[in-house]
Amino acid sequence: EVQLVESGGGLVQPGGSLRLSCAASGFTFRTSDMHWVRQTTGKGLEWVSAIGTGDDTYYPDSVKGRFIVSRENDKNSLFLQMNSLRAEDTAVYYCVREGNNWAFDDWGQGTLVIVSS
Amino acid sequence: EVVMTQSPVTLSVSPGERATLSCRAGQSVSNNLAWYQQRPGQAPRLLVYDASTRATGIPARFSGSGSGTEFSLTISSLQSEDFAVYYCQQYNRRPYTFGQGTKLDIK
Image (cartoon, rainbow over all chains, first blue to last red; front, side):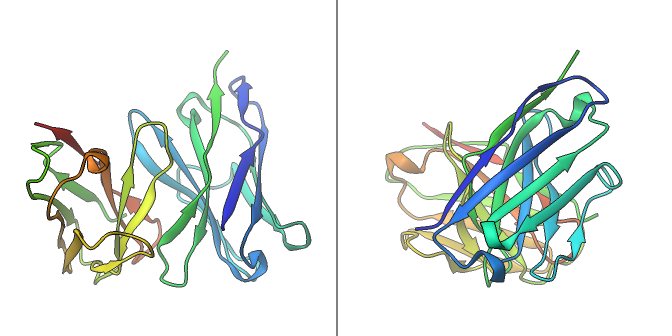
């Protein structure tokens, strides 16, 4: 059974940093492309980052230059380093496994990030 | 960025009846379209990928159709557990984008 468990969310001030982690199990992590997706009440679901099996990374313009996605295959772990955080980054952040079909096959339970002073 | 527009925003249907949800892409996404279900307090769950292929374990009452810019998800006979929010998503090109969701309500 695929399991994705996020951690690291919390309250942070505007301009601050936070590092999210995702512990993966139940599949071959090193051969899976992985993503972070966030969800807010106002903007719905938003794709935040992707990392391929060759450590190639991709971001939307909204977070490019501020967020960094990385992975440690030996530890079956995915990370999201979030810098220069803004109020609009407040959201639940999901760790997501991309399937062979390119869709988002499996999702974690999410971790809440609140950016507020 | 490919804008995904779902309609209606809310759909009220009685249990046992059929529901059809729509999703329109601002430009062609071929068949690189997925549907997700989200129940309250839960993460989204993949229902359909490649516009019409059911994901593993998804009941046959869920069916997807369409290609290019027009897509639909049909639930043939609504069960109580189907009342949830449904999202479409294109993965044809980055940035991957989602629709704003359709809430399926009990009538």
